[in-house]
Amino acid sequence: MTIHIEDLIFDVIIGVLDFERDKPQRVIINLEASYDYSDNKFIDYADMVLLIQNELKEKRYELLENALIGIQKLLYTSYPQLQTLSLKISKPDILPQCTVSLSKTWNF
Image (tube, rainbow, N blue to C red; front, side):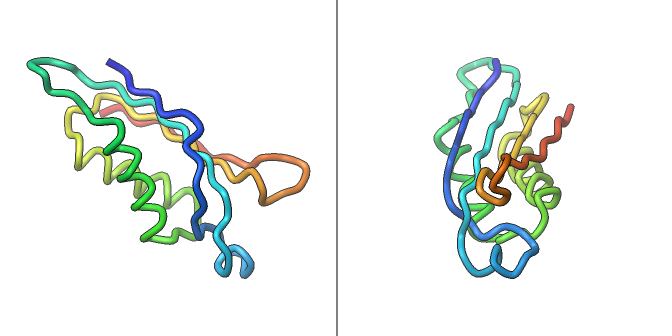
């Protein structure tokens, strides 16, 4: 099975610039996670969304790289049945002419 969470949008403190540390900014999270479904052992996608939101709001990461790694560790610890995980974090408002994103895929 593969879970898709697309365009999860919320505001967080994330970034290294002074103004990014003072005021929350919008981020967009996209996720694709595969796992072996058997014996009604499923992953609750609503819980997964809350975990991601809480992680980013509580940790207030400076770098997107560290935010991706933090989310990956949290999700794999919470759901050890994950086989693959692809994450993408986008900051649509940081530059006026584009959306900036960072992504990574893990195979477990």
